[in-house]
Image (tube, rainbow, N blue to C red; front, side, top):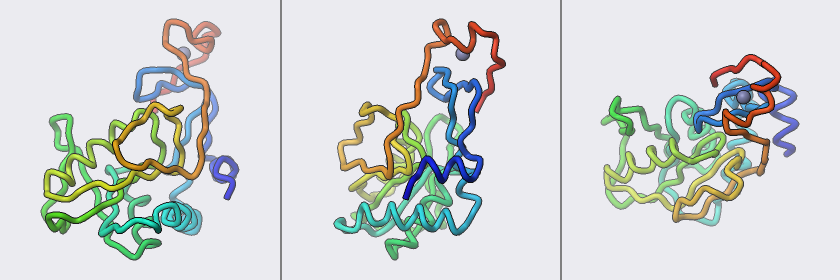
Amino acid sequence: MDILELYKKTGALLEGHFLLRSGRHSPKFLQSTTLLQHPLYAEAVGQAIGELFDDLEIQFVIGPAMGGVVLAFVTAKALGVRALFAEKDGQGGMWVREGLTIHPGECFLAVEDVVTTGGSVQKAIQAAEARGARCVAVGAIVDRSAGRSEFGVPFRALTRLDFPTYAPDSCPLCQRGVPLQEV
Ligand SMILES: [Zn+2]
């Protein structure tokens, strides 16, 4: 599966001038929600991610809301396990609501669409571990971290993309006066 082609085809590869969550600026942004709104593409992505982890014993898949909800669902469907999500707790962390079952000692896969710093998937991991489960791997559609993410467990992505990013004070797009969009 050509992941970048899938983002392009669905209009999910945005080009312009974007303020990333990391505070850096980039000419490109992957808007995974736009891709994942198509159930057939979402399922294909989930199937492919599931295959990256079929060597591991996993009882559930969790993703950070909102972006990771659909991805966790399709990946869990492919693996034949439960799909959970973690939500922002309003204090900078995340929690897993009571209605979502976690048995102590269960092993889980955490997923996020695009891993750049890995911050939000890390919070989802902490939320599930706070309920007594253990993260055994992290999965993503795209690894944009350029090797910087370190989760302490296997991290596998369908593809790796290294788009340029710039510090705000040395951004060529800012210098050309291109309007900055928050994403
Ligand atoms: Zn800029």
